[in-house]
Image (cartoon, rainbow, N blue to C red):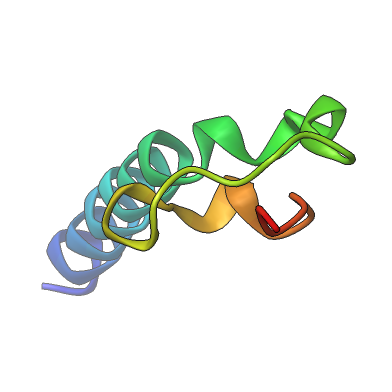
Length: 54
């Protein structure tokens, strides 16, 4: 019974890590610093450091 619980925990952990990795794959694009931001509707987390259009 304990082996099944441990196996289930490992499977859940691995699947959650892969989904987080997919959602945050664009965060490493720090090259967007200084670039202008897209419209607010199209922004994602990777656009944190972009410049607002004036």
